[in-house]
Image (tube, rainbow, N blue to C red; front, side, top):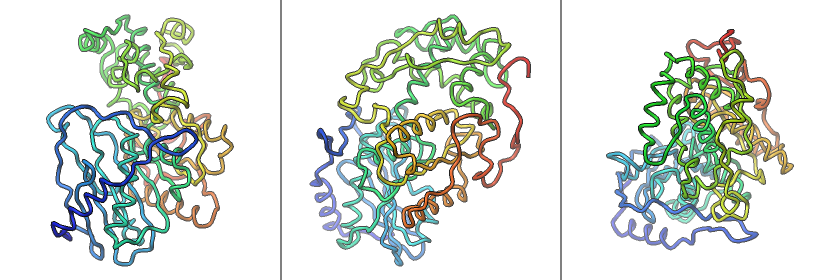
Length: 438
């Protein structure tokens, strides 16, 4: 790895700290992030070894860490990578970390430079993540002898996918194109809160602010755990599948790791939490559904489920924090998304919401969505990711929109076009069990 002289490191850090951060103003592109949690943050090790034929740069910037890799045969373009959610709790919750690009070898082999940043704090912080990722553009130029990139691509996974979608929307001409892998978004927390309300109806146990852990324990006892669901557990499992996109390959497998977590992640929003994200949560617009023959009807569920209306001061376009507002679809550059059928952490229903927003804005020709038959969150293969990236680059250069998948409608056998390879135990056209009659 290339090591900086002390003076060079100081120069770069000072210069990075002096970069004016693009914050939102009325009528202008920008982002005002939800403030970071107030705690002490520790810096991990940013150093890494370059691939053969490339140079590695790393260091600190404005409270965070960064990594940059530039191939000797650089093609003039830069790929930014935004990482996913890192919990700010637990023994390592205060440690800031920076990784490498998910398909780094391919990027470098094709002549692209790449850059990645920790964010100045951990937690669910897509607004701050976007600003810290954008700061890499200037850090790259400084590391590259003052030479800026001709084109900059924005990529990210999970919360980093939210960063990507937010960046493509709020800075619509900054990036040549975006690749959002398993992207989260504001409406993810609508889904989580709705599952909390559904769990209350199914179990008859209500969440209370001072007994949340005990409430979850009572619910879990009544629901069972995958694959040993009780009758009530089968009801909630069906609701989670139906509300997250409907029957589809690997959905039940993906639910196995999220069954309890999905209904115990955003219950605070139902209980009056005043954080910006919880104030923005809205379940009033959601219509519940459930498979037949399970002893609970959709009508009963919709009538009894506790509802939470989004605070218009937070959820509207005029609110202070763009990251908690549903996407408006006002993109101006090509955007590719990737989503797994069995992703029950960030369900594919979010892709439908994104499509509706982009279509309503008249920008459907700038969006290509691809579906993959995967039983977990963000578990794309290298061939799947590199194919999507290469197709995005070709789209940017030629203007020809690549093939995508239809995310609306029946997803029972979705994902056959781009999944590579098919995973072990691929269910083919087998229908997901969502009712007692199957």
